[in-house]
Every structure is written in C-alpha cells, then in structure tokens.
Length: 272
Ligand code: CIR
Image 1 (tube, rainbow, N blue to C red):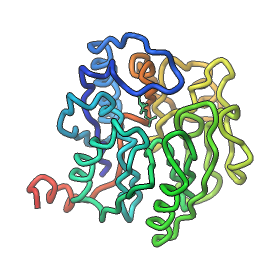
Image 2: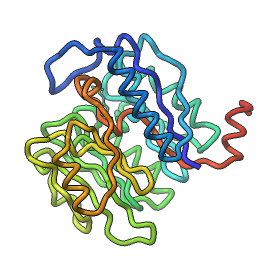
Image 3: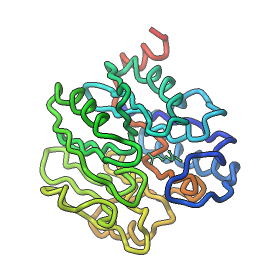
C-alpha cells in the first residue's frame, strides 16, 4: 500500500522562503482548494493520504518533500538549508518512525528532500543553494549501506534538483527509466542511460512532475510539456498548482510517498 504524507497550507504561506521569484500575494483559500485537489488525485491513484499536524507558524510547512528522503530500506530525515524550515522535520520523523529505520542529516550538513531524485539504485542529489557537500556525503553514507549509488549534480538557475528533473517512468522489470528535464537548469550529461524528455521551452518549471504508479501528476499550468509526455505514451493527471508555484513549490513538493505494510500502518495508528 502507498502512504502519501502531506500537510495543510498554513495561512502564513505568504511569508514563505523565496529564492528565484519576486514575492506576489498568495490567495490562501485558492491554495487550499488546489492542495485538496492534489490530495484527491493522490487518493484516486490509490494512496492513503495522511496529514502531518498543522504547523501554522512554519510558512513553508506544506512542502513536506523537503523534510525527508525515503527508500525501501531507510528514511533519511533532512536538515533543510533554510534555517526557517528546520523545525518542519520533527513531525515528519515522527510520522515515518513506524515505517522505516531513521537516519538523520546532522550539522554542518544541509539537505532538502527536493534535491534528491531516487531512481532504481542511483540517487541523484542536487548541489543547490539548500544542499551542501556535507549533506550529500551523509546521505551517501546512509544509502550506501543499502546498495545505492549517490551522485552529486550541480543545479543552476532553479531552487532544487527536482525543479529541473524528475522521473516519469521506471520500468518494473528493469531497463531504461524516463526522466523529464529542463536542460538549462541541470546538465543532461549527468543522466546517461536514461531516456530524457525535455520540457517545452515556454514552460521552464514543467520538469517537476510526480509519478505515482503508472500515472504522472502534472501542474495543469504546463500543457505543452504534458503533451510531450502523452506522446511518449504516459498518462498524465493535471492538477491546478498555480498558487503554490508563487511560493516556488511544485507537485513533488507537497507529499512524501512511500510503500508501507499493513503491520507498520497498524503500529502507526496504535502509536507503538
Ligand atoms: C522554499 O523556498 O523552501 C519554499 N518556498 C519552496 C519549497 C519547494 N519545495 C520543493 O521544491 N521540494
């Protein structure tokens, strides 16, 4: 079973961190409606959606992806590069504890989950304004134990690695995975062995899409790139994501998705 961890949109979102965009008013009510549609899409795709407790004083807390990196064997609790976001991770650690052994990124390491692209056995990590070499090294140590190769990739011109590249198809029996990429923000050459679909040049932020099983959730604001995915036979689910985009968030940012067992779900519910 897939568990999707989310968190509500706080009223304080207007005070979010911003790196590349100028601040614009965010319509909180509209953001809440968009977020509900996103959660509904996850539910329709078979996820059990569970929200972390509301965090009204943490303006970026809806962007739960940045708080952890989860693979089958372990959950690595992040240490966000923005100091204002560090208090977000505690609730994520509590939510993941029933489901995975935990590892923690410790100072001076910083790592945002949005910088981590997990593919079968290869984990790409963006060296960005948020994730430093020490954080990458700690992630490498935590994942090497389980046979993952961790590859650092410079990111230029965008917030996180997954602003620039995400996975849209991972063949269940092995073989070439497909990524969608903005080659202006990350070097195509880092992804040898993958099939690459480029974003439409008029939609630079469109590489941030969320694969759930055989479907791909995309921001409805990027129809041309969605069309490119459809041409490759991928089935896309558009969701409105314009308000949270003003906070530099995309569709991967608002959930952490992991496979869980009935046993670990029961422990989570019983609190043991
Ligand atoms: C930030 O700057 O941290 C937030 N305003 C946006 C975070 C988006 N998260 C993500 O891409 N994983």
